[in-house]
Length: 249
Length: 308
Image (cartoon, rainbow over all chains, first blue to last red; front, side, top):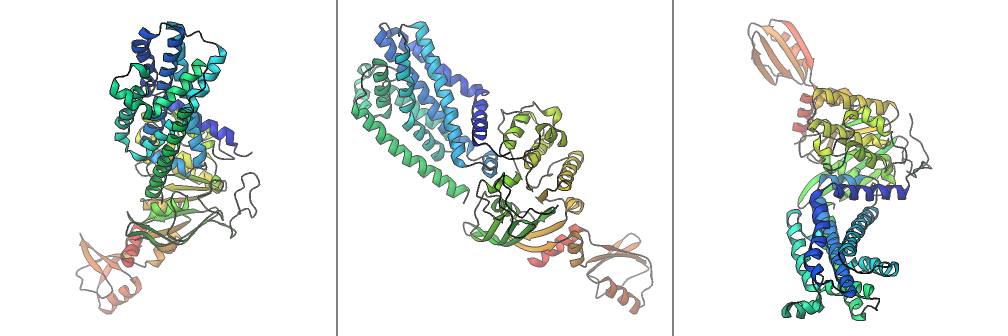
C-alpha cells in the first residue's frame, strides 16, 4: 500500500471546501451578494433576452470574482501565520499539491456561485438558456478569473490577517462597479466610464459578455487580461517568496 | 527490532546510512538575525529508542526539532532523516510530528482531522484504534473548537502516531495535561515503541524523562552539552545530598552548602566519600546518616550551570 496522490489531493480539497461550507460568515456573503445585487440592480433592466443574458453573466462574474479575492486573499492571509499551517508543512505533502487543492476548492465555490446566479436569472428573467450558451459561459467565467486568483494570492501574501478583509473589499467593490459588472459600461458615470477600459474587471466582463452573445472576445481584452495575469503572477510569487524567507528560512 | 537496511519498496523511504540511526544532526547551527539560536547541536536518534531532549526555555530544542522535521533549514552542519533530506516529502512519510502549540481549523471534527493526517502515510493506524488509544473515541464527532485544552493536546499527540511512522517527534507533548491524560499519552507512547517505533520528544517534565527515556540529550544555549542515559547524566554529576544528625557542624571543605533543617543538617557535595573522610578526620560526631543521589532535576541544573 502506498500513498495515492489523487486520494491525498481529494482529502485536501475536501478539507478546504468543508471548512468554508461550515462557515456561514463565508457562505452567506459569497452567495447572497451576487444574487441580491442582481435582483436589486439587474432585474429592472433585464427586460430583453439579450439584456437578461448580459446581466446574468455580469453578476456571475461578480460572484466568481468574490470567490477568487476572498478564498485566496483572505484565506491565505488568515492561514499563513497559524500553527496549523506550520503543522501541514511538516506533513508529507508538497506545497504544489496544497496550492492545487486550494485552486480546486475555489473552483467548487466559483461554479456553485455562478450556478446560483444563473438559476436566479433563469427564474426571474428570460435569458433563454441553452447548452451551447452555458458551455461558452462557464469556461469564460473560469479562464477570465485567472488573473484575479493571482491577485487574491497577492493580497494573501502581502496583507496581514486583519487587513486582508478590508483590503479585499476595497479592491472588490470598486473593481466590480468600474468594470461594468453591476451595470453596463454605457450606464456608468462619466469619470468611472473613462477609467473602466484600464481595469481588469472590464476585460473580464468583455470575455463573459462575448460568451453569452456568441461573439468573439475583443483581442485587446485578451491582451489586457494576459498583462494583468503576468503582473499579478509576479506579485503573487514575490509575496510567496517573501513569506517563505521570513517564516521558514 | 532492527532497522531495515534497504529502502522500503512501498514508501521509498531510504534506509539510514548507519544501521540503527534514524535521524542525525551534526554540528547544526541556526541564526535568527544576529542571534545564533543553535551553535553546534549534535543529536542521534537510534532505532527503537525513546530519546528525550532536555533543556531550559530558549535553549533551541524547538528550533532543532524544526530543522530535523524539515520546517526550517540549517545555516551550518548537516541534517539527515532516514539518510535523506527532511525537506523531501517522500522522506517525511516515515515521520510523525506533534508541534508544541497547535490550533486546529475550528470547523473540522476530531475524526476528520485524524483522517486528514492519516491520508499522508502509507501504513496508517486505523482511525478507531487512534481514537481509542488517545481516549478520544467519545469525542469522535466533536468540532475541534469545542475541545478542552487536555483534549486538544491528546489530539495533537495522536497526530504523531496516526500515520504509524518509523519515527515520532513530539515537542513537549504533555505540557498542560492533567495526570490522567499524561498517563494515557505515556501508555500510548510505550505501546508504539513496543511495536518497533522510535520516539524523539522534548519535555519540561523531568519525571517524564526518567519514566520514558532510553537516552537523554541536553541542549543549552544552542549547544548539545550532554548525551547519554538517565543513569549516566546522574552519574556524571556526582553531586550528592548528605543528610545527618549532629550536635553541631563546622565548615567543611567538601560541602558546598550546609543547611539546617530541623534536627538535621543537609549538605550538598560533589564527593560524598571525601566528605565522610573529612567528617571523620575532624572528629565530628554524627548519626542517622542518609545519602541520596541527585535527582535528574538537580543533575540537569548542574549541567546547564557548568556550561554557561
